Length: 233
Ligand SMILES: [Mg+2]
Image (tube, rainbow, N blue to C red; front, side):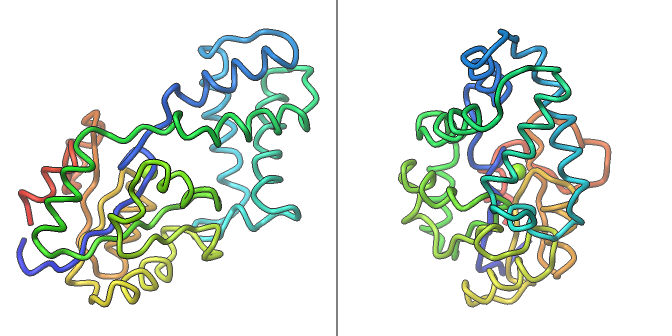
């Protein structure tokens, strides 16, 4: 692969992860508001509720703008789904306030170790760098706390744009802000649909971050760490 002028990155499970895992944060909060539950009990429920909420908005539609009350009410709907599936008695509104604060703590978001050196190396090569993330409006603040804001030429957040990956327009807007054509840009992310297919759909080159080698046999162009992407360019 040669001739690339820009790299764009997904955020969740590409640049950073939540540590402790979300199921642990939810379990701790549920225990503060009623019956104690373990992270092991929450984890499958969390995944099922996420899948359920995904189906309520078509791919590409901004989920966080889909409900009256915006992203906070989206997280409220998600939480009510979790509570119902756990048959947990907690009052969702104060619990939502608690969880909102828990995920706003900058220390729960951890960069993967190779991220900063990879971004610096890409910058030294003269590449333009961007973020394209399906996230709520709190993402810029999280990236700021991690000292990443200055690493990117542009940061595109679905809740602010009003549309999500894999919608072509969220990629196209970012490319326009970076001043590059799709064929000059590579997008790196961990979602086969939102990242890989979305980027390919607008003519970008796509790389799937596959840290656990879940997709090794599925025909995707994969890397297990972000620095491998630079070796391919
Ligand atoms: Mg992701």
